[in-house]
Amino acid sequence: MFKIVAYGVRENEVDYFKKLNKYHYDVQLESELLTHDNIETAKGADAVLLRANCKADAQNLAKLNEWGIKYVFTRTVGFNHIDLKAAAKYEMKVARVPAYSPYAVAELAMTLGMMLFRHTALATDLTRQGNFSVSTATFSGEVHSSTVGIIGTGRIGATEAQLYSGMGTKVLGYDPYPSDFAKQYVEFVEQDELLAKSDIVSIHVPYFPGQNDRLIDADFLKKMKPTAVLVNTARTQLADYPAIIKAITQNQIAGFASDVLPDEVEVLGHDFKGNITNELTKQLVDLYPKVLLTPHIGSYTSPALTDMIAVSYENFHQVLET
Ligand code: NAD
Image (cartoon, rainbow, N blue to C red):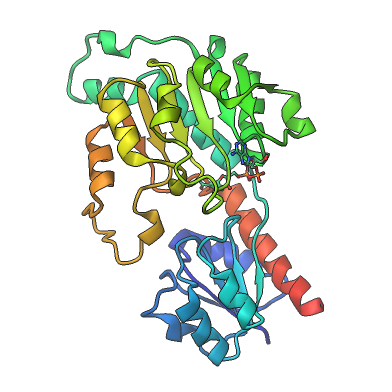
């Protein structure tokens, strides 16, 4: 029987793996992410199934190849964690999940944007401290009569545009390849105009190494309104964190939220026991409630997880059929 070792499987995901296994593959569920230290757990398998931050670098792929493992799957859209050159060298087949519920990330981006815009974190903090007098710092506009700017109006960005439009919010968008779906909800403008006019700016562009590293830099931030807030649920490499920290501390922009953290790219070896080891992450945490951080939970919803696992099983099935 085709054997798959799935890495980074959280406790509440086990039932999804069992329930959706309609082809009855032999699936070994590992709670740990794939690292250099636990690569031996793949021995004897036909395929590995990864998630973001699993280490599928040249060293680990060489080991998999040595053990005859020719299938590397990831249950994510992104595949920055897989060394594709090494995989090609060993003639490995690599498959990802090209799409899953776009509402998962779109809703989180909206939640974070609206929390910043309506000063929700500050307000709940004040009441937790027993301060029930209305602070002027919590005075705000209203989302429905504001302007949202969405950079990257693909599946997630266009879904966010659709949801904001339902609230009556004006939606500006910048995307070199606007889809017909997005055009229903978005007025397309150049990026500079979007930044100058938007009250909430939301980033949904993929990261292309060497092309859009640090898209959100000092120049980008200078073009935003000082009252505007910025949300990045896309990728950490798109953000120039020192520039963002400066823009927040100097009140160049009013708030920043991120579902992707500065140390994500080198997350292995970092401490998940409550100690923040990355200096930039520490500085961002200290800027709460003007800065809100979530630990890459954008796609951590039941519908998205169902899609990811079901499509992964379909990927195995297709590969075995061809
Ligand atoms: P998509 O491919 O459907 O859409 C991306 C869009 O960005 C495309 O329309 C493309 O034309 C546009 N684009 C590319 N470069 C651009 C640029 N420089 N300026 C403006 N637009 C540009 O992707 P998607 O499914 O909407 O996902 C977007 C990104 O969200 C992913 O690449 C991933 O990095 C991120 N993501 C995050 C999470 C999370 O958990 N936080 C989950 C899934 C995806």
